[in-house]
Length: 311
Image (tube, rainbow, N blue to C red; front, side):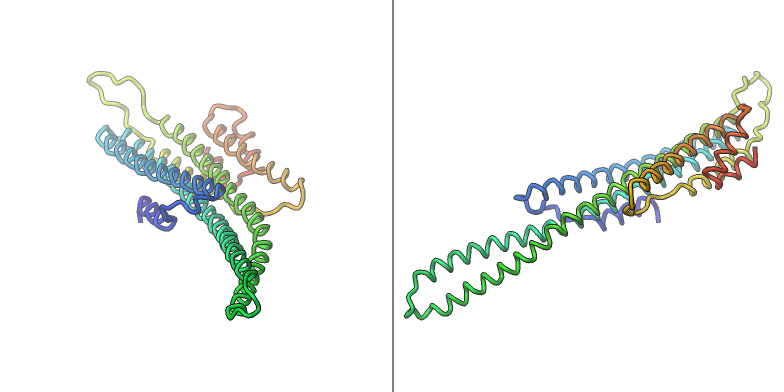
């Protein structure tokens, strides 16, 4: 299935009624605004992925008629850039999951709001029933029925009071847990996307270094292009690096502040490792290349050892 097909499935699954729920509830209106704007982001990502795929195909088609060098490098460039499209599609999946979780909050809020509305309605009916009952004498034939009605209304109100009493703090807690999950996906998804794009951008710069720029002497043939194996290895390494990027997970509650600090430090090291490794890989003339990159490799990202072993 194409990436656009995947997007269509995502959009169909997360589609919701166009009517904004509970227009009288400010909290729900603001929540619906958030959900709707996230859908705008998802639609923008859909268009962006489609446009990038078209660009990738266009540059490949042009390069195929411009000699072995441009044909190979632009074809490999398309392979690298396809990882960007896939990474954006992955981020779009996170957006869909975020919207689904926000809709879970909306459902709980709507249910609680409906319960409060039913209670207000029952209170109004009970007040009317009480006034009517107070005007009835003991000889009124409707007295037993009116008394039973009032009792029934008060029982329903009491049941709703218990439900609302328990549900309000439950919704309060649910909103916070879900909001954290949403933002973990948002920031984790951005970190995943940024790391993958950094990998592709950096290795892409290395790839295009093999475009020959020597001046062509009139009447003479250019030197044959011989970088096919190198560009293939660059694309293969990019795939390995991209596939090694950690995907965001649902959060857990740390036991203390030290756990938070340790987790933040690990995340920082991961980002620094990506930049350090790629910089060392690109800077082939650096005398510290092997030492620094190997230290970075051993400490943080052993999966990238294959590239260092080749240089």
